[in-house]
Image (tube, rainbow, N blue to C red):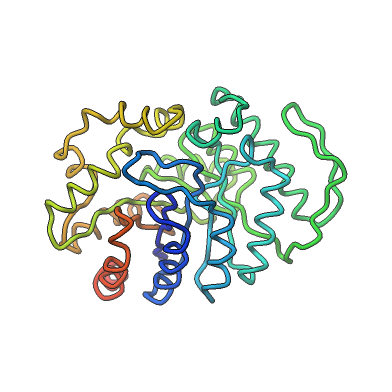
Length: 321
């Protein structure tokens, strides 16, 4: 059975709203919730970037049964993997085992802030591989010593970790990351409805494991207003992750997206009041073999109205389709 999720976008809401929206999304009937983990938003117009892990602690205690997940955390530069393991184990206990640790190779936008530079993609994947080794070892609850090319761990142990420990998801965008996900992950994470990603994940050992996707939508009673809002807050999306991962700040994203037109946004993102338009956007992921799809409602101040609409129209339509 396909599961449908809600995205807690740290880039467009402050932490108090994230906690309120998480509880409302659970009450509306979403099966799971994912949260972005950014130090900065993509565009100044988005206006927020609270700490995802602190927010997750409150969300874990403010919800009771909905699954939670980072979408995604980079465990290599801004955070040491041992710290990520401790954070994940803590949130998992606070949520009574409802947490999945979603991991990825990161974006320059968030990782450059600690002054360690931004390595090329192949080095980032080497770092992520070492991080996965360290996190999996710490999730065992044993003492861990590790010496790698990029990370060291000296006699570390997680004193509070659930049994079983948190599940791990890995974000993919191509063959190298699919291989990594197939070898290490309990789930594949992707933002493109590309069936080839699932096939590569299967070939690397992912057969039968969940595939978790994410799709942005801009619901509004007025279609033009929905398009305007999507263009203002989400035009960065069109660059693709190979470009987006390299840009260092909001000025770079603004420059890279300055020629994106509203018509381009309307073609790429479902906008407006028609539930079938949004169902069709989600269905692309279903058709590509995804088992779990989280929607992103664009616009922080639209979340309460969106969640009311989703409860009564979107979710019933998705489950019927």
